[in-house]
Length: 113
Length: 156
Image 1 (cartoon, each protein chain N blue to C red):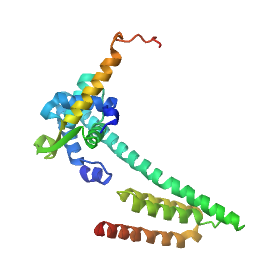
Image 2 (cartoon, each protein chain N blue to C red; image 1 turned 120 degrees about the vertical axis):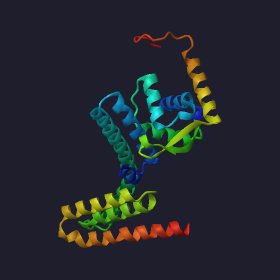
Image 3 (cartoon, rainbow over the protein chains, first blue to last red; image 1 turned 90 degrees about the vertical axis):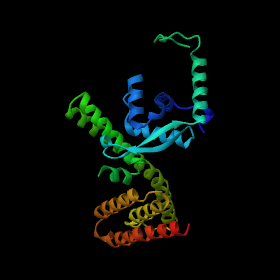
Image 4 (cartoon, each protein chain N blue to C red; image 1 turned 60 degrees about the vertical axis):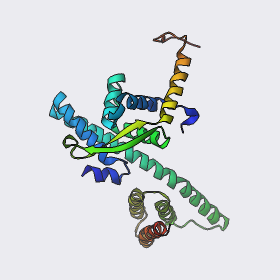
C-alpha cells in the first residue's frame, strides 16, 4: 500500500491516465495521454516502471490482451485501477485541493511564505 | 531479437513494451516521416536500455562494495597485527570471493557473471602473470557457484 495512502507525482499522473483511458490503458496509450494532457514526454520505460510499482502497491491490476499486426504480433498489457487505487487517488486529490484552496492560480513567481 | 535482449537485462513485460513501441512507431510514420519515427524509436529504446542497465549496475555496486571494503579492512588489520606485508594478489582474491557471493545472492546472475569475468581479467592484466593461477582458481568459482545456486533452486 502506498505510504500514507498517497501516491507520488508521476504515479498520480499515470493513475489518472489509466482512469481516463478506461479499458484502453496500455503502455503506449498511457504515454500518449500524459503527453497530450501535460506536454510531458515520458519514456516508455518510465511508464512501465511506474505501472509495475503501482501494481506492487495494489493500486492497479493488469491483463494480457490480444496481439495485432501493427504491434508485430505482440500482445498488449492493459491496466485497470483497483478500488485501492481509486481510494489513493481520491485521498491525493483531496490533499492537493485542500492545499491549493485560497491560493491564486498561477502562483506569482516571487511569492514567499 | 530485441525482446530476448531486454528480458536478459531484466526488463519485465519486454514483449509488451516492444509491441507498444512498434505500434507508436507505426502511428508516428503516418503523422511525421519514416526517419523521424525511426529516430524516435531508437531514442526510446536507448532510454529503456540505459534505465535497465543503470538499475542493474547500481544494485551490483551496492551488493559488491560493502563486503569488498569489509574484506579489505579485515585483511589489512590481520596483516598489520602479525606485522606481515599484504600479498599482491589479495585484491583479486577478495574480488573473486565477493563477486561469487553476489552471483549467489542476486536474483539474476547474468550481469554479475559478466562483471566477475571483466574484473578478474582487468585485475590479472594489471597485476601480472604471478596472479594467473589465482585467476584460474577464481574462475572455477563461477561454475561452482552457479551449480550451488541451481541445486538450491531445485531443492527449495
